[in-house]
Length: 112
Image (cartoon, rainbow, N blue to C red; front, side, top):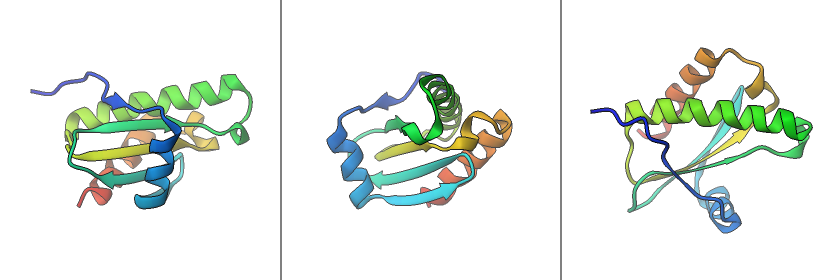
């Protein structure tokens, strides 16, 4: 059974820095994905830098990326993984299905 509940998130700066230092990084149009295998469950962190623009643009990009991740991770159901998704300028502009397809392909590559 597929659960569409949002995955557990982390918001501590130390978690983001740990993934940046130890995790694998995948850059794609629309987002950057950082992946680190762990012993625990699935945890995800989202971030959007001020380079994207004002708060409205950053929040729009982050909301789109969170929803794409929620739907994609529900289908794939990875365990023992921590992810950080970093928004890019294109995140708020590219079609949602393209964003999901890119995220799905990148996660498949990262988890193999």
